[in-house]
Length: 431
Figure 1: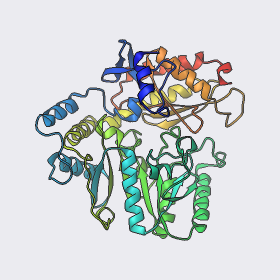
Figure 2: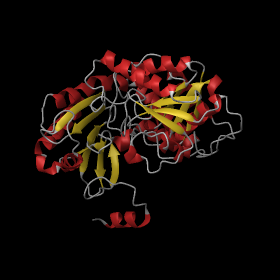
Figure 3: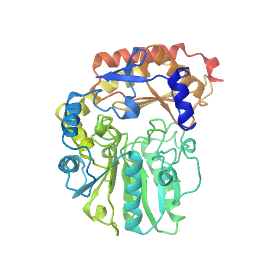
Figure 4: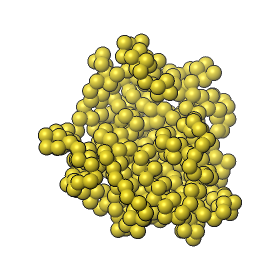
């Protein structure tokens, strides 16, 4: 192990996970590639957990950050902030939310915290609906609404949370149903759960595609069907777009747009800053302005992060990176499905957000989770020059999410490495 690894383990918490048997230090990046401290070059199919959305070292972003840093780096929300206002205006424009207002934060966790605060303040309730297998952040409040036990270290919470079906298909008890019947069954489950509350529920929060959960989702339309039930009971719908926003799915700019209806609140983070600490909440003025107390943000929407995020968002829109995700994503998705493997239980996703669930060979459908195989393929990809992610409730899902500027040639190169690494993984590694 490296000297930096020893120093990392000595001074940072033991619960901070590191990838790979021999963790690597990423030194610099350009385009869709990164280099480690030893000079090894990798095609990056994970982007720092879906955060490097456009490309590494995007000139428009680095130039905007440098120019702003030369003027002023920080001021807080107590002062007028031109870059923050310009960014919020552009986000409101593309949000799809009527009469939109935007509050900027430093992370997706903080964005979801703020959304929960808005919803609970509006409805005077601390009851929250969330999807099974979900993940919404690492703070005390967001852990309390996270449906993935491997990321929820405590059962204590300021919220009373009810978990409903609809966030994943492969391991769902409704998996055998048609899309229409699946949605109907999930709506029935939601209604049954609501009937068991005391009637005062603040919101349902849902990822259109579950990120940490292994890039899982229910059929298109299920969240829209939920929204009809929620609106009848004056319950807000929060769409957690931390991983699905900004065109990553290819077919839409926001994940919720595949479901019909419009959320009451949208949260975002990660990709909009292209690596800068940026998140936020979008809501109609009637919801956003509803807090009955003062609030500020010291670091949210700082001039330097706002300037970089605005340059990144404009670059994404001007170069139609959503369209590129729709064009290049199927090379990976269809290519992986065309190479059957006894250790692959499911290949799923949209655009440049693809999950590959690994299972023990011959263990049926759904197969028994094979986290050791996922770890072996993760290592195999790195050895071949490709970085991918890993997730799922059991840690057995490969998460593939390259920057949205990925070229056809790079997609084909990455696909070849993935197929080779999957083929090289042996069933013995599943045990």
